[in-house]
Image (cartoon, rainbow, N blue to C red; front, side, top):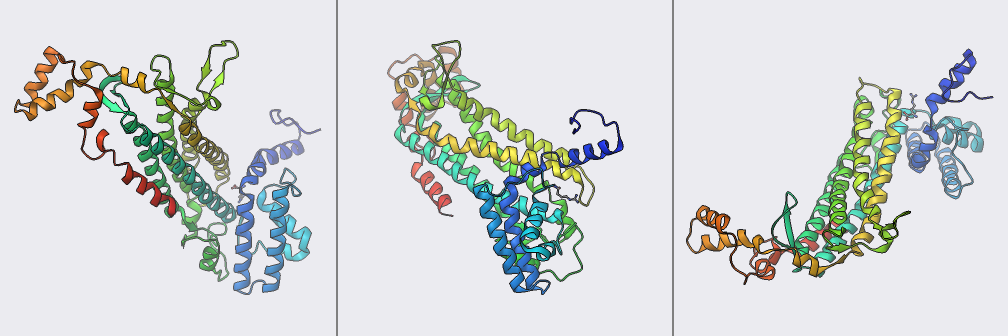
Length: 434
Ligand code: ARG
């Protein structure tokens, strides 16, 4: 009978078995997500071995054909990666050995599971960032459409959650279009930064072979090589933190949106309604529709930040590989998945928002024109501070002021009457064509 994970071992053999399970933990299950990347990198490594004559070209081709079968069988479920294997890395070698005999046992020449884990994770982060970037741009577009459709719809601008000045739905939504465009641009910066191949570092000190490291890096589509094997090894965790930090920025934008939406959808504001598909009913209160999706957007930013912190704590290590690094995998994968799922769903929520223009406009009260009036008085020659004082003392004593007039007067670039939506659209389009 196997010992439950929480029980104390009573014999050496039980302790050994328990230690094995502790070391393996759920690593092999997590490796399912990295497996296609690991297979790809293995193919490139093997082609690299052929380039330097450490394998024949025919053998390298046979391995690559077998790797293609493995990838296909993994995708359609004929090959299952589970606890029969210590990790995805050993599973690849076991498959090749079962399929090709001795040839399968030759492929680990010149590499270590350390650089294998590094390269698979690197490829996975690259793919994840590219996919998430597309979702972020969809968010930007959806926000831009809503801004365009409600360009001059008045709504209050708040500071400290207090009514401040007249503003517009257009300005509010364009702020998200721009923030998401910034987030997509940051992904490009991070993609460029992590775009380097660690393969050839082996266990962290290189090997006694003239490996074609540059060729292998090119084969995998990397822009460049991580030159120093120790630096490559030490970058595990570092690139993960950068990737999550970048995704966190987009999630932070989404969190703010989640906040705004939950607040503005409440009866107290009543500015917007969320699409039915994005709200849920209550199990006890028949009158409720709850904004759970927007709430999970908000919480998910915290999940990504938490995972990033987890990795930051784990990589407090001296040079060289340490098994500690294995534990960076779970938070990385969890956070990437959370960010991806949130950002993929967000465009539908934004597209489905209904704006209650009457409620938005009605929330702009007369006093909110005070700041506009100080500006008008200043333009008529009254020193600004004196105008400010007068409005503070006397309040707004006119009732001919409308939110529409206030918006029309805001003509500087980026402001309500001059949102620059075409420029914003051009920016988003150009990000989308890269
Ligand atoms: N699962 C391990 C990890 O993610 C693979 C590398 C194991 N290397 C080692 N030297 N024990 O780090």
